[in-house]
Length: 209
Image (cartoon, rainbow, N blue to C red; front, top):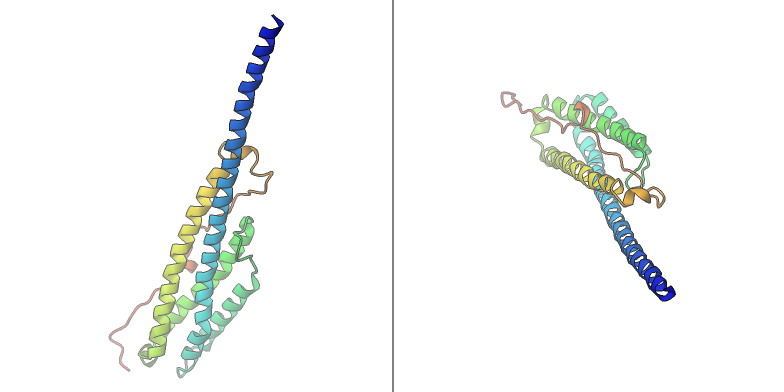
């Protein structure tokens, strides 16, 4: 009788051990999956930073080219220079996606002001046929438009990777330990307001030099 009870106890312990092993394996697999997703979000954030930096790097050459146009509205160039400086004051880790929604919102506001200033420059430039015909300006304008397209694409990709990560940390079993191991929800880029739309370019073919 004693031996029978012993076998029963050993059997129960064996079953519990199997379940415990399965739980450990599942937890490890889930943890590793979260690490991969987090790395994906951070990598995409770095790409977002790259495309914004590309736009910022174009601005000095753009301003110098436009400044050479006679009687060009200096206030427009001043607004761009100031907006670019404001962007430079916001320091976010380029290798890790922010977890603070307020920080990301501040980053968006600064970038939005810069995008708005650039948009005004392109609109104002239509009044200067000689400027529009300049090869340097045409090249910089095309590169700027390309940067705006890249920004829109990379922002969308960031939101997609952040969505996958945020969903994963809320699913079982990750929901029980994610916060404990530092897996925090990532904020999203908001839908772009008018200030962050790509600069609109309108060509007035009736203008005469």
